[in-house]
Amino acid sequence: MKMSPMDQFAVKSIGPEWHLSHRYFTLAFTNQALWMALVVGVASIFMLAAASNPKLVPGRLQSMAELSYEFVTNMIRQAAGDDGLIFFPFVFTIFVFVLFSNFFGLLPGAFTVTSQIAVTFALACLVFVVVIVTGFAKHGLGFLKLFVPHVPWYIIWLLVPIEVLSFFIRPLTLSVRLFANMLAGHTMLKVFAGFVIMLGGAGGALAVLSLAPMFMIVAVSALEMLVAFLQAYVFAILTCIYLNEALHLHEQH
Amino acid sequence: MPDPDDLRALGKRLDEVRRQKEPRRQQAPPTLLGIASRFATELGVAVAVGGGLGWLLDKWLGTRPIFLLVMFVLGAAAGILNLMRAAAEINARSADGGSTISDEDEEN
Image (cartoon, rainbow over all chains, first blue to last red; front, side, top):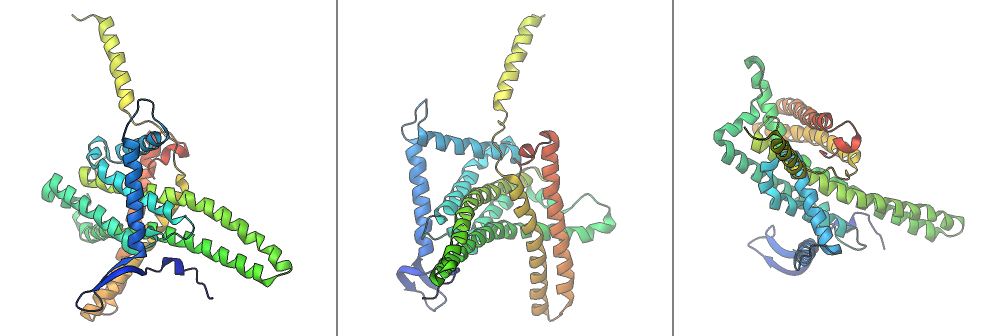
């Protein structure tokens, strides 16, 4: 059997399919949809269980939920100021979804939802729709001043396109960063696992050598846990930073 | 004329409330790695998007290679701009929050 380290990212239909009009329009329940539903379901159950029956002295579950609540609150406060806190539900949802997706992906045999650029790009686009709507709602057309830096007139015609481009590139950098990190890490794990099997199959002294990539898998798994948290954090904090710009334009707060 | 002792006590209580409202310093996540991954994508994606947009415009308008060249440079400039903004954010954060890594990283 030939195995490719990229097989784990294949999106397959695992349930009912509806073919709409022509072959490019197929509605299907895929492994991706299944894992997304799992992520959302488990995260919701976790939060609901933690919030039901709250105690003054919190138990384990309640402490975890309270810690994540405080963590995100502080993150928003520092990056977007106190008036950014109205976006708490939004940022918290994104953070928890990405965090749970990343950690679910680390389970053996699991499908990593955030290793699909379709998912991360959709999330990033959602963030940008919220940023743009907030900006126009708060500042009206003044939001467009975001694209006009304070520079002399003879250079402004050059800088406005650069500013516009740099703004619209952000959903891409935001999504590519998360997607590339998850893709690279999980591919690396599978490649090392492939080495173990190949060396083990070779027999003799080479079979002993297969312990080396095995050790690497353990090390990379640990690194991946760190990356899973870190990338969820980076995604959430950048959401806050972009919301801050929409709320306060370029002024310092 | 209010009693100065009362005022002092009130001031102390106000300070306390203010301190409670301030975000608590927390265990900073491993941020140098975060900064590195942020900077790398910031520049790479900008150049790729600039070039890609230029290529599409050329294909659409049949003006190869004018837009490809112009947009490539614009993309690189936009990438550098985003990079400088990100760096400025980190600098600002570390300037007002002390100079240790754990402080500058709350931002990134």
